[in-house]
Image (spheres, rainbow, N blue to C red):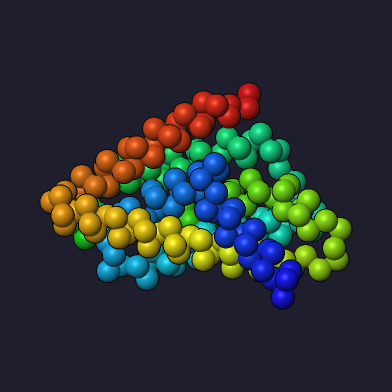
Length: 193
């Protein structure tokens, strides 16, 4: 039980760590196009992201794949930038009920984000032969943290749109543009060539 709590907490705080805010930025641009009543769609998105994240963690933990850390550190903000840009380009469609189905982005970009934590995860599990259970426990922590953040994003979006009469398109444009600004700065700081 102690191992479960340890790996679960590691997954939880991997996402909720405000110093490593790239995960939170990605969740913002992933969820901002949805309304609170669409929480099940967002749950599917973050679950696909967790699956992608877990696949690359597993491949790395078992020594199947190794990717240059500097490349991944650049690709992570690039995924955030691309998702935010897609939101900006499709904000009008999202505002009339044609939500951007980011299923592909969530899974594919989850694969990339998983590599960003893979070296630390390998150190964390050490040379233990059983890597599968820690991986599942860690993924559960990631998933719970993502649910907390996404519900917060959806709730804040609902409050801002209803209390301050901000229309949905503007909410998507404002939030996505702010995140794009952060992502660009992160990309410039992490240029690997």
